[in-house]
Image (cartoon, rainbow, N blue to C red; front, side, top):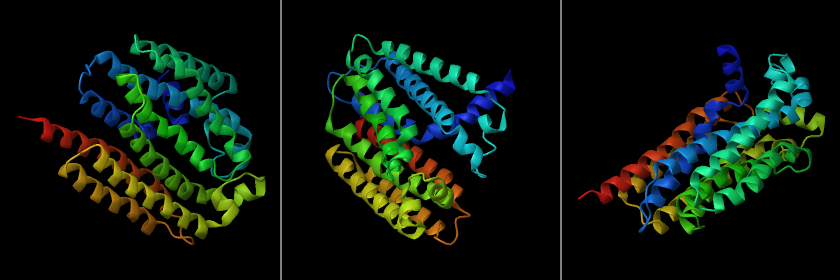
Length: 292
């Protein structure tokens, strides 16, 4: 049983939840600092559950849709479905259960209505990413658009409204995730071209793709500073985003068109620090400014 649990956690890359969850939590913290907003533990629990369940459903569905492609790609042929470690039926059941649990978790936000009403379209958009690379080279930004919904959704879960601050956090995710997904997909540029799958590296070449990723991360940095200004955050957040901006640029030093050996370091290690770093400096900044 423990082995099965481990296999499903590996299937959905559970550790990669750290990329979007900190942004959702920061949006929730910022929402709770708004006037007339009441903190409720059920909202916090609901945000965490919805994030985990929606992402798990989307990742499992992606593995189902891509199972034949994964089997032909030497880099991904060892994944759980192609290698036979998990059956198609088991992953299908897992996807359905996670989807149903996601819908159920939105009920924690009642009497707020928007989280429940938006649950179906949000999940459909997340699942739709799995088909994106079959028709558009900008599939990386479908993924980033899927993840950018996390701070907006967290804010809605707390405030039951749309607002500028979570939208700016969403903009940070959009450019940031799009950029590092382009870097990651450079490893499959040749395979994607042979299989007639769409991606920026397979269409424009690795060198141009890395330049596009750099521009995307420069826009991430710009959006971070706009967020700092609009949300009226303080010097702690300002200092933090300066450091995190340097980290974003550092991953472009790690990866070169003729040397992709350090892509995984750039993809996971650096970006994990970026996501957790934004949450930490944001929370510290809020605490410092609100203490007596």
